[in-house]
Length: 157
Image (cartoon, rainbow, N blue to C red):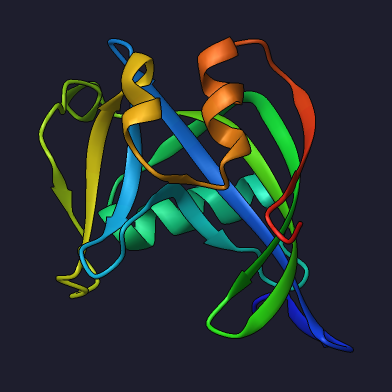
């Protein structure tokens, strides 16, 4: 069971992400029906740690094994989506594909769960300002390249 809890007028989300960077590009997730990009990953399950959850999410979405190579950031993220207010805690981990052949991938990847509206694109870190990336705080974290950090991203104000 994913850690999403209704607390008063908010939803509390506990999420994880895997940040995979190659040749100055970061692999981001895009829903073709939305106007923004996001980090690979998803909600952490109850009793599951954030690193294990990141590995599981990438395996479920891409069918690829990753290894966690470091901590990038913890982001306290406040936002509103589809009429709901969210208080989200995001654990962002640096990761790499395990297989050498996967480390050479430069093309857009498709979701293997049958979710054709999802794709995974390599975006040049130097051009992140040209894209809407959520949470917004991740742009500066990735561009500054100084890890680990703790950020508060408040899109509610």
